[in-house]
Amino acid sequence: MFCETEIGEEFNRDYKLKDQINSASESIIDNIAEGYNRGGNIEFVNFLRYSKGSGGESQSQFYRAFDRNYITKNEFDEGYNLVDQINSKN
Image (cartoon, rainbow, N blue to C red; front, side, top):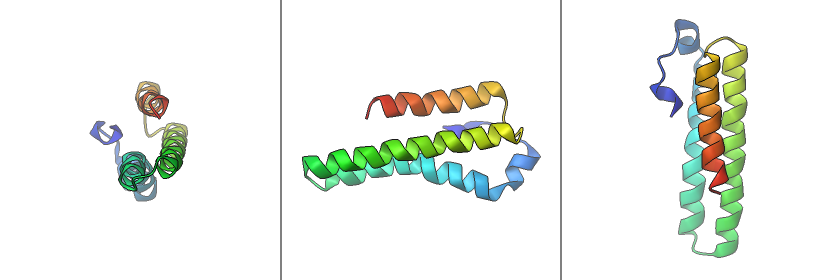
């Protein structure tokens, strides 16, 4: 998703933010997979909620990157909207 964007030198050095974006975005699919593999509908629904929360966290990190001028408005919109699309399927 976001990692495919060429990032500037300052953003490249902000390891914490990059790690947070990667971790939160990876948690979206990880939570869906974990909930599905638990085998029960109630647990699956709970993990879908966790996944949606990870999506919100990803969007928060996009705001941080944009506020720090690491990404352009177009890059922000692309990443934010992609997470919205993913979350709308949950």
